[in-house]
Image (cartoon, rainbow, N blue to C red; front, top):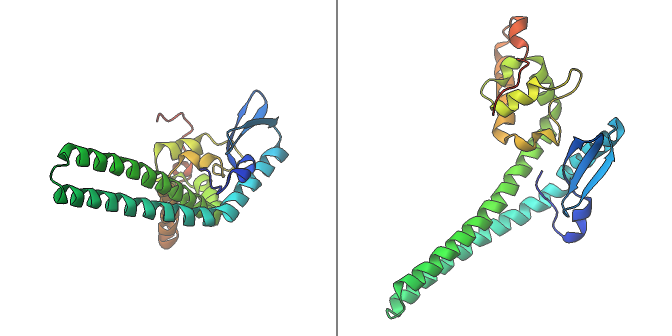
Length: 213
């Protein structure tokens, strides 16, 4: 997940992601450090619980902060461009390329800040959606592959490669998935429940193969 912290002090305990390597669980924190832990079910369960808490505890304040930052960037960018335009009109001696260049640079910087804030907001909304629907998403994905219709190849690959007895989605595995993918599964489930039609058992099983990106 993205960094939801609002101050430097919290970054050393905020988990961004984890992966396995050399019989260890490698955890990446928001302060840029990487720690190695023993690869046990207990450790992974603890990490997952902490990531779940991050979504519940830290996301609301971060959304508010990002919305303010995004709106401020929009306002400042617009005000600067308008101001430079007025300045050029009032004082024609100022070279057009100068006011145009400053306006272009300001717009570009503003666009980067706006995009960064929106990316974090989108990530938070995705994790909130998962937080609310985690059980249904997992049960639906492993119960009937038909309900993955319309999802990305990444989503389908993740489900097809999930070990038997495990759930495909958690606070770490959804990092590379989109909110659209998760919503599509829930929409498919609603459609399935509405019609209540039956399927052949072989159609419900995910295709166990490596699906290319």
